[in-house]
Length: 368
Image 1: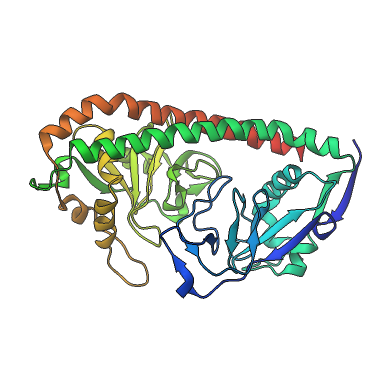
Image 2 (image 1 turned 60 degrees about the horizontal axis):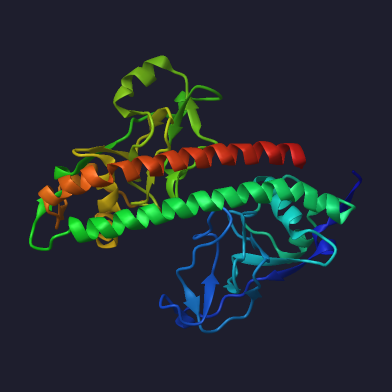
């Protein structure tokens, strides 16, 4: 297979995003979907929660979305027409080249793109710098497609996995609301679960190998990103952190920072520990009732509103544990028994997802 090195501008057109004034934004689905940056990026497709009635830069379905502001180099597909703000660029692949090949190639080098030029770490990248990124690409279009095809197959499997879990989560959310939420009842959230902040590992504990530790940065899209977890091999510290040892299926929640209140389900068969400022949730019934509560938007908004501190907002676990919620305990126990098997399916699907992602990473290392 013969390759050539080209600059990105030789195989794709680069269109930089331009932000309309915020007065044209809405959350009501009026106008075009709008993305300012990577806030709602998923693994491959963004979630849309903002729309705009005025737009300057439009990505077409099938274009590649590229983050030009920190974090530089994150990419997603445009799965529909999307208006782009200043934090993103649209990469539109020219005829004769495989957009899938370029997408996976950029995925592969994305984590290092912000330091490609002379070792400089970019907080942003301009059009010229983006156009001049070097791309190694097979000369033959069929070779490009043959490299991308197995990755596309894995992504299709991952999409089905995600859709199944999304449907199960929606079922739990709607059923909990219908069965358990009762405006006439008042209970402290501690009747369902209690939150405890994780163990206070310090910077001297981190090692190149050892037991994995979940930090706030690892909580993503209601699960845990198992890539690049910090590790600890200090046996004395690990023994003292025994209360925060987890084996899969637990739920953790961010207690501080910009992502305050985000939560994640630990995949099946994970074995590791929880770091400080990550809340480990101990259920009184089972995790499915915890999940039912956390999926209720009004309850989550109230939990997030408990945060205090301007520079770095944080929530006290004790404050969460004292929160009053409108739930019927007897109904909650019945819900728990009925939906516990569905929760087990969710955590196993997360485990399967991690296996597929690992296979994909190994393939990308071999193919690019």
